[in-house]
Structures are given as structure tokens and as C-alpha cells.
Length: 271
Image (tube, rainbow, N blue to C red; front, side, top):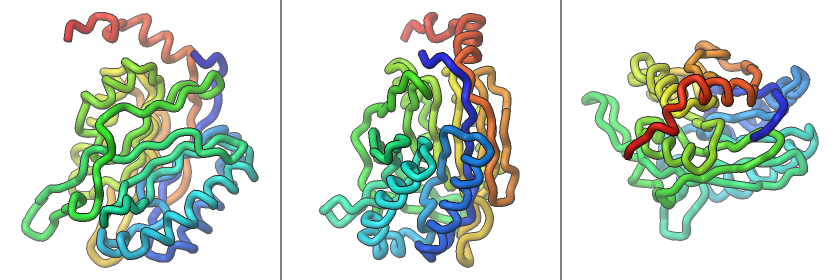
């Protein structure tokens, strides 16, 4: 168990299809977060490029070359931990992984996760998504970055939020903070985002750390926003609303210990 509290920042972005412009915005948000005392900074899903799935496929090689260099260089420059949201990484099979990395202040990628659950839904006749047409699912297992300084972080991405068994496995494997970078649709976000995030925090007595996309991306894609940090009691301790920017909250090991002591539900499991 990590022993000291620290500040963490979730970044909320309105990423578009200009890769360099998105990276420039990301850099400034990270810089501002560090100036405000954050030791960990989290980016949203597809922070570097958010166009249609076919557009991401066409740009994937360039994104996969540039983004790791950017994240490594920026983490090292600001001496900060970066949860690198997600970005497409070609698999060699004609598809990509939706890849979420974790960087330390020395610029090293120490852990990474490829999104398991793919967003194939028909919300209405004018709004459908088929992530599996372009994205290869990752191995169905929990991925944890373990640290004596910032605690144990379980990695996931967006649609994974709807699958509580993944987070229960993360916690069984030692996670204390659940990372959920997202580009949640406006349609689902207004009703599902907050209840699902709070449920994952409460049922796992863990922090939930959820950077987000917000606003209109191109002509048709609209995301909900409300990047959040939620504490193990289920309280929202940071909410970015619907405008791009950053919000910061304290990650406190005593809070994890306190809630798990008061409600030891993780010890009471029978299945």
C-alpha cells in the first residue's frame, strides 16, 4: 500500500483529426497539471486523434510512431506519471489495438493495456458504432501497474466500464485506483456515465480515475465530457463538466484503507 497522498489530474479534451494540434493541446494540459501540483496526469481515450474509425485506421501507423515518443519525452520533461489515455496501434493483422499505456517520470512505458470489450452498438437508426470492424480485442485479463509511491493502478478503456467482472479481477489482483480513459457518447453518457463510475468505485472500494473527451468531433460524433475522479466511498471529488480542461483531486491511501475497513465487502465475497 502506498503511504502518502498526492494530487492527480484528469484531462478533458475535444480532440479532432489534426494529430499535431491534439498533441500540442495535450502538452499544455500536462504542463498546467504539473504547475498545479499533479504527480499523475491522465489523458482520455483517443486523445491524439478522434475521427471516424476508418480515419483512425488510415492514420494509425503515424500515430503509433509519434505518440509513444511524445508521452515518453513529456513524462520525462515534467517528471510526472502519465496514464496515456489510448491510441491505435497496428496489430499486423489489418486491425489495431486500442492501446492504453502508463509512463513513469523517467519516460519509461512500464505497463500497457489493450482494450478488451469493443463498442459494437446501435443506439438508434442514426447512431451506430462497430469498433470490432477495425479494433482487435486485447487479452482478457487484468493489467495492473504496481507502485509503492502512487499505488496500484488497474488499466481499462471506456466501454470496459460496463463489465464489472473486469474491475473485480483488477481489485483481486491488488488494484486501488481504476483507470478508465473514455470517449463516452453523449447519448449514453447523460444517463449511464456517472452511475457506472460510482458503481465501480463503490463496489470495489477503489478510486476511479476517468479522463474524458467532450463536445463535437467532426460533424456527427458527440461525447459527454464530465471527466471525473471518484473516491472509494463513491463521492465525486473532481468533475470537469462539459468544457475542455483539467480537474485535480487528491489520491489518499488512508481513504482506501478507511473504506475497506468500514465496509469490508471485498473480504465477504462468496463467488
